[in-house]
Image (cartoon, rainbow, N blue to C red):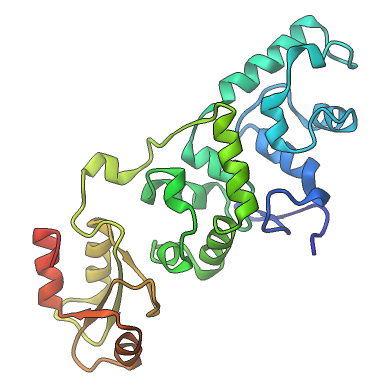
Length: 263
C-alpha cells in the first residue's frame, strides 16, 4: 500500500512506493524529477507544479513532456515570455545524463552518489531492466538495501513502460560517467564473482582487481553468480555453488581470465 509524501534520508531520496506511478505521491515525484540536481527544469518549481497539477495539465512527471505552450498563458504567473521559457527549459531537459536521470526517478534509497555509481557500471538505461539484486550488490559501496530497491524498480512492468514512454517523447540519455567507455572492453566485464576460502593474495586486493577489470564481487552465492573462486579451506559457499550449478574456479584460473578475457 502506498503512503503519501516522500522520506528524505541523508544522501538519498526514498519514496515509499516502488512504482513511479503511485498516485499518492505524484506531486512530490514531479517536484523531485524537475529539481535542479535532477532534470533541472527551470520554472517548474514547487508553486508551478502545484498549479499545473491542480489544473490537471500535469498528473505525472511524464506529462511534463506533453505540455504545450498554448496550455499556459491562461494560467496565473504565465505570460507569453514565461510560458515560452518553461517550454524551452523542458525541451533542454530532454538531453540528460544517466546519473541525473536515475536520481530524478526517485528510486527508493538511491541518492545522487548511488545514481553516479550505477552510471559508472552500466552504460545504458536498458542494461538495468530486470536486473538481479546480486548484479547491483556486486558494486562496491552498493549495499543489499539499495541493490534490492534498484532490482525491484527495474523489474516493475509499469515502471519499464513509463521509461519507454519517456524515450518515445524525446528523452535522450548519454552516459559520460561510464567507466567501461573510457577503458574499452574489460576482461571481466559484467561477471559476478564470489570468493570462498583463503587465496594466495589478500582478499581485498583480489576484489579490487576484479572490480578494476569490470567484474562485480558479491558476498553470497546465488543463481546470478557467474563464478565461485575457491581458495584453501572453502566454506559453505562451495556446497551452495555445487547445488546451484555455479562454475567454480581456482585463483590461478581467475588470473588466466584476467589476462585473456575468458576461460
